[in-house]
Length: 321
Image 1: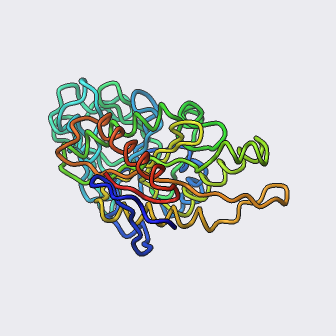
Image 2: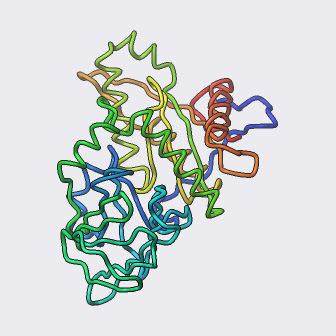
Image 3: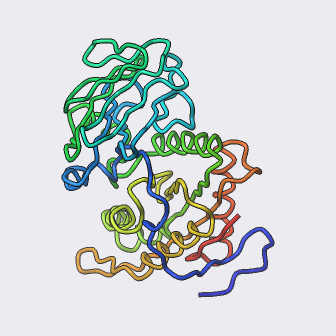
C-alpha cells in the first residue's frame, strides 16, 4: 500500500484487528434491513421488548435489558420517543423475577394497557401481547424469547430497505444519523460515522458487467452486516456505490479499528461471479462526534471530506478527519 501524502487533516490508519462486540452493550435497537433477517434466529435468546406497532417510529423495538427502563420524550430516556403527547418521563418498565411491570410516572396523557388507564404511580404486570399506549404511540409487549416480525414490521422494512442490498436506504440511514446524533449530544456519549465507497466501481461494471457489479454490492453488504458490525450499528446505502456506517456509543479509537478491519476484510475476500474473480477494495472516511459538529449534516460533510482524502491519497485506506 502506498504511503499517503502529507495532510494535516487526515492520516492513514492501520491498527490491529478488533472485535466490535467488545464495546458497551446497547439498550435499544431498531429493526432495519440488516436485523430483520436474523431476528427469528435470535428470538430464543432475546430479552423482553416493546415493539412500536402504531405511531412513530413504526417498527422500532426496544429491548428491556435493565431492572428499570424509563420511557419518555427526553433524549436521555432509555426509551426515547419524540412525541409531544408523551411526557418527558412518562412510564417506567420494571423487570423482576415475576416478569415486567409498567408503572405510570404521573404522565399528562396517561399510560394505557389494553385501553385501560393506569392510575398515577400504579403498576401492572404485563402479559405477552399486551398493548401499551403512551400518547399516540402504541407498543406491543413481547415477552422474553418471543421477538417477532408481524405484518406491520414487514411493511416498515420494505419502506426503509434498499431493494438490491437489503440494508437501509438513503432516507432511512439519514434519519437514523439524525436521531443518533441528537441522542449522543443529549447524553454526551461517543458517536462515530463512516462513509465508504468501492474503488473504481465503474471499471468493475465495464469489465465484468452490471450483474457482477450488483453481486459485489450485495456481497460487501452481507459481509459487513453479518460479520463485521454489531446489532446496534446501522449501515445504509448512501449512493450508488457509496455507503454509510453509523457506530453509536463508539469512540474514535475503536471506530478506527472497526474501519480498518472492514477495509482489510474486503480486500482479502474472494469475490467470484460466474467463476470470474473480481478484485475489490474500498476507501473509508471516518469522523467522530465532537464540539466542532453542530448538526448531523456537518458530521456527514466531515466524513465525506475524509473519504475524499482517502481516494486522493491512493484509495484502499482509512482516513480520519
